Length: 443
Ligand code: FES
Ligand SMILES: [Fe+2]
Image (cartoon, rainbow, N blue to C red):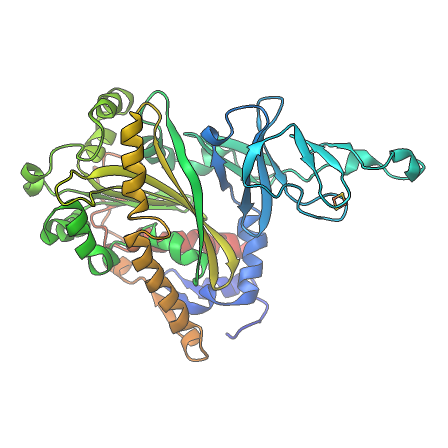
């Protein structure tokens, strides 16, 4: 199978080999597959567009991407969130060029057509009578997504009018989203602006890594983790090999790295969390969710297709205590071998201001454009692109065969929903992201 063939449903049976837990390298490099993904994945799935806390008031807006399409997320006069294609219905110019703001509507800079917060065409620059009644202006609103909805403050949209309800789409993943994003009465809020940077890698590499790649963590991040949390390498290794990975269904997957019991005397419960917030978690979440949070080293997950999050804790002052942070990100496809990473930090709304700042700093130093963890991951992902993009390179597979050893080893009495496996090393959940991708690509 070579570049620029037209791929049909049967080709995707081979491009992702479920039985052998491998995938063709082409799916990370090929232009035709990349174009097909736009139609078959990104025009069909629910995509993350923003957070409720970013558009609290009528007229608030942020400009975002839904894969290769620019959009505006607004709070309309009806109080609802709207997602508008940020391309004018006249000639297609970008209507809103700012990253965020508050407005009564949007005026296209090219010929001055004016649109409301819900995308409706309010006025053209010239009196519409000059069109002599030959144009139906009611058909010239900004294109809107078919659906917009939110869960745990996270706003998703889809172009697909046949998409399931967001609640059904997220399914069992809601239990985990509650654990990380919905654990105090006020929920979470975004702190700061999104960071954006380009990685020389296919968007799926990031989504898979967060879905999640346990085995890389000791090798790539081990020494930084030891230095930044102040724990021995043995704790990091045992945490990864002995903690659960979870397949939540519908392509949503992650790992929950827990501090092993024999280290609990060195690691007090809820280390890194603010004590006032811990009291709220205990009231707002169930005992199983609290159990996971109380000894959390890292909770990493991907909501299919390209929304990921990580909660972990870091201290960059050798005398200081680690501080917990919550990072969310979207892996925006730019080309088969380029991805724009959009990166935000969240914090519980009720947390004191100084803790919010500390939490953001902890996150910025680890998971951001200059963060130690992202720099290390980006190098690995761009090296994969260099390794597999040549004539010989494209002929091989990408290997997830740890899954062969673990796929039948589900944890029978796991306290959360979904299928859980006994190790972050299992590679089952990471490969599961690709199995979901395969379903979409076959359709
Ligand atoms: S392209 Fe927007 S008004 Fe002409
Ligand atoms: Fe990593």
